[in-house]
Length: 116
Image 1: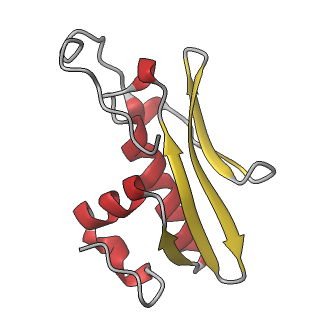
Image 2: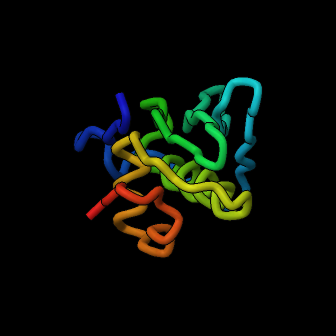
């Protein structure tokens, strides 16, 4: 799954979390950004090809859904691409949707990619 949604029966019943205290780690050996909370690891997978970064998959465990973890991964992964001067190829629908909602990343898209 590319993006998991919080079931409506659980919305508002989970404790809040201060995601600003979380550390996202670029696990370059596994080609993914990851963050672990309470033993659950959320990931944003990528491939590096020359001057490009291809985001292929983002997954947040059910236990962490609805807490902003996916957005934190996307923001960190895209900031990495921007800092490294990489052209972004968002094959992952979650990353593409994040870029659509945060147009400041659109100038870094690989020519030919359109996220709307």
